[in-house]
Every structure is written in C-alpha cells, then in structure tokens.
Image (cartoon, rainbow, N blue to C red; front, top):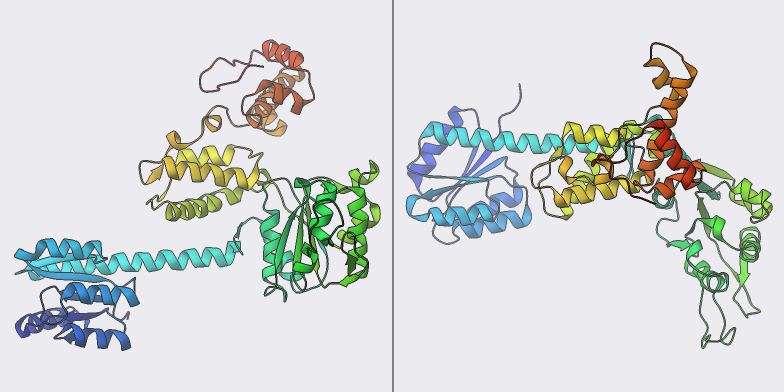
Length: 469
C-alpha cells in the first residue's frame, strides 16, 4: 500500500491545530504541527514534508517570512496559505513568492481536502515529468546530444568507447549535425576533462594568422609581433584541441600539424626552441577528405593520422524518428530561456517538422523551434509560429513511394512525377530561390524554368512563395 503524504501544519492557534490535525489524520495523512515560525523552520531543517499548511498571521516570524525562508532552502516546497478574509492581499502576495494556493478562514473541510489533493497531484505530476525526462535523457541523450534512433545510439556507444582512449578522432557529418557537441562529449568523458577544450575554427583565418594562433610566435617574428605569444597548442596542454572543418587548412599548415601529431612538439613562429605538448586532437569535416586528397588539396599522410577512429554523424533526414524527441528538448530549453510556458507543438506542426528534409540538420531545427517559442502566443506551438518556407511545399516522396501509389508503371508519367518531386525538394531546400535550386540540380536557371513550365508546376500559389531569379 502506498504511503500517504506528510503534511506540516504551521499555525499558532491551538484550536486550528487540533481541527487540522484530526481532519488530515482521518484522511490518512501523516501530520506534524508547529506553533510558531521559529519552531517550523527548525523542523523544516531536519525533516522533509510533502506539503505545508502555513498561517499568515503569527506572532514573531509571520507567514511571509517563513515562506521566504522555506523557499530559500527548498524552492520546490509545496505550500498552501491559511488566511483570514482581511489578509487576502497578503495571501496573493504569498502566491507570487511561490505558494501553491490559499484558503480563507473559516474554511470548509471538504474544500481544504480538495485543495490539498489538487496540490499533491500537481506535485506528483511534476515529479513524474522530471522522472520521465531523466529516463528519456538516460536512454536517448548523451552530453546534450539527443537521439533514440539506432544510428544515434551507435554514435553514443562510439563516444563511450573512444573517450577514455588517447586516439585521434575524425568526426564526419554535414553542417549542423552536432560535430562539436560530439567532440565536447568525448573530451568531457575522458581523463582530460579537467584540462582545456579548445576549438579551432579552421576556415575563419588566413594561413599565417592560423599558424600564429596554433603555435604562437616570438617577438619580431613578423610585423606587429611586439612580444612573445603562446599558441593554442600550449594553452591546450593535457587537454583537447578540436579542429572544426579541418579540410580548410592550407597544405603548409597541414604539414606543421602533422609534425605536432607525430612528434608531440613544435616551434613558435620565428622561434628556435622546441616546445613539447600532450594534446589530443579531434577533427571534424563536412566534406569527403579522400576526394580532397585526389584533388591534391589535402595530405594523405595527415588523413591517415586523423582517421584513426571515425565517427559518422547522420543527417537529420536519415533519423527522422529523433525529431519528436529533439522538438521536445528544444521546446523545454527555449521556454526556460525565454520565461515562457510552452507545453508542446500541435500535431500538424509535428507532421510538418517530420516531413521536412532539414538541409541545415539539427541546427536548423533548433533555430526553427527557438523562433516558434518566442513567437508563440499560446501554450501549444501552431503553424502560425513556423517560418513560411516550412509551409510552402508538400512532402517530398521517393521513387518507390511514387510508384507504389500508382496503379500502373507508365514510364513517362512516373518520370514526370519524380521530376516534379525532385524540383520541389530543390526549391524547398533553396527556400524558394530558383537560381539556387537550379545550381543544386546541376541545371541552368533557364533550363529549370523550362522544365517547371513543361511539368505544369504552379509557382504562383501563395503558400509556395517562390522567389524569382
């Protein structure tokens, strides 16, 4: 049999104490009584209670002061205020400070029991939500990375397996798939977690400046080098350096990076002293490095050094079963950040989100949900809070689905249908800009325009909002 809740009665009137104690005991609750604010706070410091009945008007510490003191040590404490009619304004003030509800003297017994039951049910649901959220995070989350799909569970296993090692790791995936999150998770679960994690945005700096950032320089190494400056490798000693988009590093810098990886040492620009470091390298790329090797813009020997362990992050379109979980995570995150009470998204919004291909991957989904939370005027996100480009195109379907939905296999009709869907997908990913869609399809803009006219694709429908060339 489940234990009944414990209730702390804080009231200075013996008659009220007796009435409440008898009533609540008869309902099966465990009861503790305090006659003053001071006595109550002493008990609160050594015992825990499921609910507190607190009288506002008491000698010494009054109810408001007791409420504030309890909330300071236990922000989740469930408190119902007992007040006389003349102090209703004080009761409302108490609710603003975190009280759950209030009841006026003289109160009806069944009314009080109803309020208590409602408060305890509210607490139970809150605790259940927290428990479910923690369970979901344990099952489907890992260091802020969310996913229940098999491919993401495999990623989690790779992180767990590789984090304790010293091996270099290459993370491959499209932009927005969470490569830096994975790198941080590996660092946080390694024995280097107490040391720096340094991100190098490889493509954001010219080669000379990047080398200066990585290896440091000595005074006079170049114009403007007015003093000695240590580099990021020195700063990351015993920690981890994460190279974001390593494919953008120049061949000259690649050679110097290779030496650091092989010998664990380097020299500052303009320097003659060898500096030894212990740094783990994690690199990320959204391109095929082997293709760049064939184009002679990436070193094969560096690739082999980096590609000791490869973690491939799938694009969001290939793990759409994770979208509801990601949506819930981002709704909670941005509701808290923006002090809003958004509970969920509507079914048709979720359907739109699940059917979209997300060329920007998880980062794009996160941006869409953040925007929707900010713009939403109700507790449920509706279509009106979504950006227009998500509402402008029908779901794209594959060849097998097109064919299976037809009664015949007429080649010409099926080919035209597939071409329509392919063009719509390109337009959607290009956010309606025909020139970009043409580039994605490998067509001239004029050729795409001719095909659109030939297939009878209507670009004038307002919900599509196709931009002209």
